[in-house]
Amino acid sequence: MDSAQAVSDPAQELAVSGLPAGVVFLSVDVESDPGRADRIFRIGAVRSDREAALDVAVARSSRETVVRRLNEFAAGADIVAGHNLRRHDLPALVGQFSGLALRELPVVDTLELSPLAFPRNPYHRLIKGYKIVSECRNDPVNDARLALALLADELREFGRLQLADPGWLDVLHCLLRDDPALDRLLRQIRGAPSPSPGDAGLHVREDFAGLCCATRLERLASENFAGAGAG
Image (cartoon, rainbow, N blue to C red):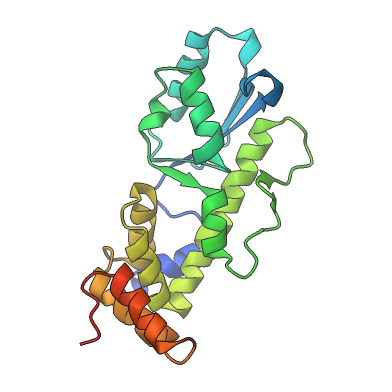
């Protein structure tokens, strides 16, 4: 076998498998009561590296027990994921349970990622509004699994984008470079660090030339990609 063929292409692998090798995702979902100040009554979590799941009925456990079980389950994870995690589930968890290790993990929110992965149809088959479409009511473990499946589909789409239009993924990576989780994932997909704003600005000019007002395009590239002068 040719040595070049033997080297795996991260984007090609991701376009097939979805979740990147060597990254352990912890997917979390909570059920809460809006009528009681969003008080959490059940927590579910799954991981990308094992079949076992965590299902915690909060009312039956002390706060210390909830924190201990979550921390034990999260040990060794690289990224915490979930649907509407950044604005809902994570603030609720951190606010109600102090000492959670997962608060230190980089965050990937599948709700935020969806319009980037599927710009023509941001509401994926597993999404309805802000919620995951689930056949099981009040089942956070099932919802955590669905969020992980959605994440795999989103990252799979980024892998395909790298193969079909790498310049556009360069632009996305440049814009998302300050997000620790997405920077790590896009580095793995692209096989390179984030492009400089100047290089990303050149891609913007090339990709959108002739598709929109040249003056507005130049202004967008100059204002949003420092150092991206037309030359």
